[in-house]
Length: 252
Image (cartoon, rainbow, N blue to C red; front, side, top):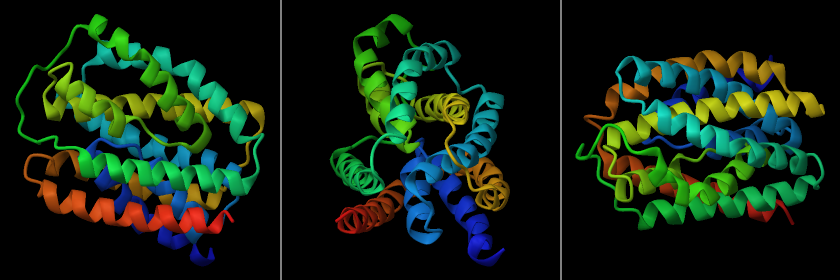
């Protein structure tokens, strides 16, 4: 089993963070699988999606049980995301590994910058549901980020939560819950598409990672109401910056 055991504690930590912040786990799983387990990028993508499906499913179930998911909004976004996920999955199997690492590194640094500039508060003000028609004008963003999900297993929460908060006036807790539910659906779609086109998977990593993300998926939703938002964001930004720079360096 070698070094695979470390995937279990990593799963708990990663799933707790992503469930608490509403972000996509791929932004953390891909660097872990590439840098720690040394998987090939095309194998890391499907492996990441399979692990995330368990973690996001755990978190989505917890949030759904709490009644925080705007299901109409979630299913609309998932429907719009399908073409982007398919295009991203196809692209992942066409480009070189070094290019995948470069793109992932740039995306990670961009996400860190987004969190630095974001001033979203965890104060739970706003509505619990929104009119889906208000989301129509942002469909282009859904297609764009779903392409990244299909290619790199990254999520959409870090991009959609600011829109849900500022443009759709959705409560922070409901925005996070809805994004976790959406990411779960996108992971399921991504797994089906990648499996269909013949992407590889590391089942040992999945075996160790799934129990960890299931535990973390239940922990994240419980700490959102009493989380130290600033400290968590600072740690998250610091790690993303280091990992992003390292991936870009490795690509050359």
